[in-house]
Length: 317
View 1 (cartoon, rainbow, N blue to C red):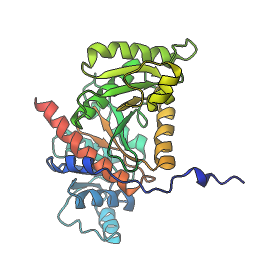
View 2: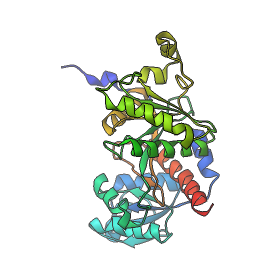
View 3: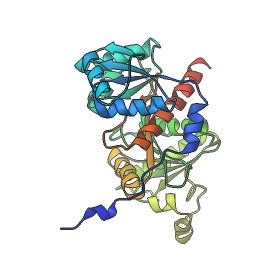
């Protein structure tokens, strides 16, 4: 039997110092952990709290939360606990965010689809009917603080052009908040040629064209195959003229399977650190996973601080 562990990277990921520094320079957000009665999500929020990235609000079954907190040795006596057992936790957390009582929402012991169904429908009051939410990963490689923003690898499964355009907008906004004034974005496809049999190639070309007026100052190119996105040498060898090849700040994927596979390959096979966040709602939404390591959870919490401050600025501008 072939041992696939040889494909796994032995390097432990590291949350980038620049991301932590930027987050710690901003106001401390009140973070609601939705369905907080489980060890892994509680430990994740504890790590964020200890680093000065969160003021916890624990939503769920109070007795269960207290028991799990005792088991992991975390004193939660000074934190706000909101009673909302079972499937009521999501709607209650949405109400807290809508009323301005919390600044971001973090997934606890709840299935992702259940979590998001409680928060993202317009009836929940956390987004305007015309707004489109998108997930963005902030990915850094070992030994580097340079981020690569990947969207959408976790929320929109088969996005149409309008959704991909919205996701691109979220990533550009985040890139500029992170200090990248003229972000370079690549629209990933199977080929750099527009091919009728591959609809995402034509859609990518149209998104790139529309971006000229929609996102002034950003450089958006596509369709681009992955080798052209990552390697300037590949572009030279293929005679592909590009301002983005080898220098992309953002990759926009055509659908979720591609993005999810790319993100997991970078983490499992290359030792990358990936913090992830949903943008486009009234507050940022942190989709932490049980399979993510501590640096990934910390990076997600740091992104939550940054996007919470960014969202408040946009709302009151």
